[in-house]
Length: 282
Image 1 (spheres, rainbow, N blue to C red):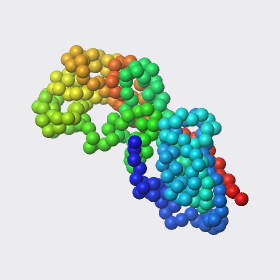
Image 2 (cartoon, rainbow, N blue to C red):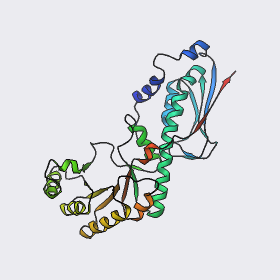
Image 3 (cartoon, rainbow, N blue to C red):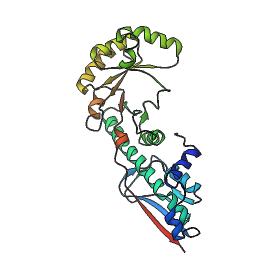
Image 4 (tube, one colour):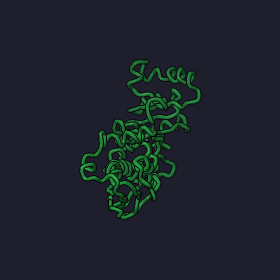
């Protein structure tokens, strides 16, 4: 579960209503009652409805219906419904709709990638990188999970992933064995992932004792050959395909023997299309 704090919800509302809603105030909407309901204009994987619901509740609305994140919804399906003060409805209407549209777009694209990849290789997992748009980590990760993907890295703090750029400062791939030994002496419980770009670097990684090798920007055919070579040295090594993985080639990488497919492609999906219906209650 991706946890959104009360401050996160407050900031979502405040961002759109920093010092009040001028239009609603001038129209005298305070004290009038109304309804708001959101509907899917197309088939979609719903996400961030819980956060929209919390915004509604914080604004004082009564939420009577909400579809959980991760739900597959058909065109025309109802997503959320609430009643209450008309001014409050207009205060949270747009932001609540947009966060669901944005997150559901990511969730839908993730679900498509997962379905395609696992149809070709049921054991493969689809992982989202940390290359999501800035300040949108929680929304992006929640949407990724709702679509059936997993986080590759939530950030720099949760995994050991050694890049070529790191190795520039500690002796390169030829010194990788001593580097891994040093890290493992300090972090015995964690797996060590190393990124490689050539067959030679892949061989160096597996011989040095890397638990997983992330191969960057190889073609599926090249990846398959490297994976076979690495597994001939260590049959248990985890092989990760990364760099340019998208809907056009994800099946090829899955068939090539990847254990994990790492991509940021889902984060740049078009938003879902949602219809808002707002009405007055006499």
